[in-house]
Image (cartoon, rainbow, N blue to C red; front, side, top):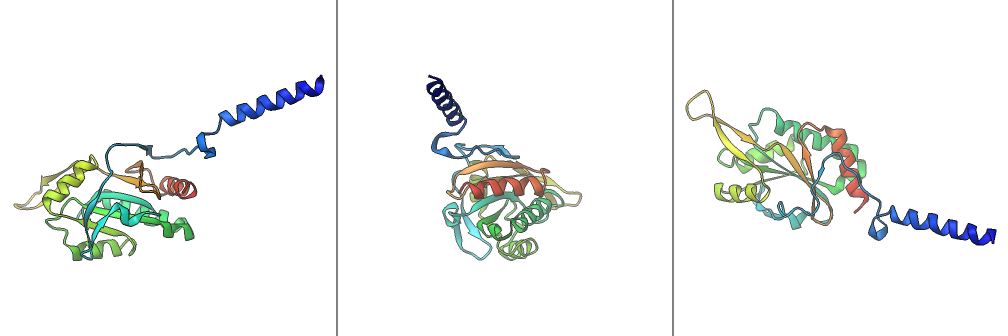
Amino acid sequence: MALRRRSLLLAGVALLAACDRPAGGAASLSFHGADISGAEYARSLALTDQNGQPRTLADFKGKVVVVFFGYTQCPDACPTTMSELAQAKKALGKDGERVQGVFVTVDPERDSAEILKSYMASFDPSFVALRGTPEQTAATAKEFKVFYAKSPGKTPGSYSMDHTAGSYVFDARGRVRLFERYGSGAEALTADLKALLASA
C-alpha cells in the first residue's frame, strides 16, 4: 500500500513538472527586449544593399537578424546601436557568425551606396546596409511601424532625421521575435541573441 502511495505521489510530481514545460518540450525563453512574437508587422523587407544587390529577409534564413532603421549622419542613436550590435556579435564568439546586422537608411537622399558601405565597414564588414527610393523607404517603414521625418537644421537646406530608435530581432526561421529598445546596452542584446541562437 505504501509503495502504491509512493508511486502515485511520484506520478503526480511528474505531471506537475510536465505542466511547467511549454508544448514541444522547449525551454521557456525570457528576454530583455520586448517579446513581439507573432506580430502582424515587420514581416517583409525588400530593398537594395550597399553593393547594389536586391535583398529580402529570406536571404538571411538560418541566422538571427537584427534590423535597425537609421541614417549615417545620425549623431547618437545610430552609431551607438550599431556599435553595440558589433560588440554583441563579437562577445558571442563563433556563434556570432550566425548573427546578421541589417541597417536600413531612412535618409536615402544623402545615404548613397558608397557612404553606406563605408559606414558599415566602421562597425562590422559583415553588416548589410539597405536603401530604397523614397517610396520604398516609406513603405518599408510602414511595414515595420517605424516613424521617421526630416527635422530642419540651422542652415538653409540642412536637416537631421527624427526616427524610431529601436531594433527588430528575427529568429533563425525568419520570424520577428523582439523589439530591442535604444539604450538597453550591448550586454542585454548579447543575452537575447544568445537565447535565440540556442533555441534555433
